[in-house]
Length: 115
Image (tube, rainbow, N blue to C red; front, side):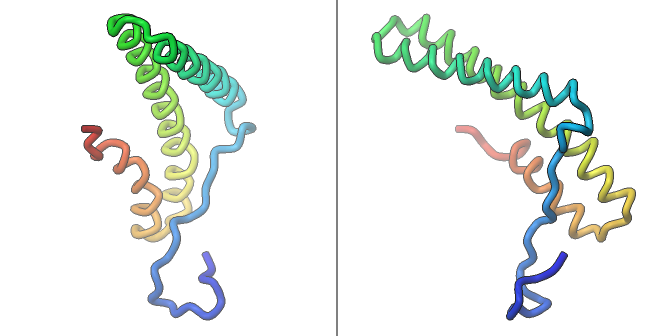
């Protein structure tokens, strides 16, 4: 990783750039795309529930569906990041601080209070 010109070596370093290419596992990629489409549908449905001022029971039930869809997407993204990016970083013997930076987004998902 290179630091931007004009920065000192002790400057705060950016997390390593990584991504899970679709070619890594095309089936998982297609499943993620399907899940994202379901999430969009759930958001649109919830928006309609709120605009039409539906009863709380119906609106809360749709909000629960939305939350479930989002959790599934997060799970799929974390799984891909761990299986591909983090595993490769460990196999390439990247420094522990680089690996820690790759784990930081997962830690923020797991340990951030949602209330």
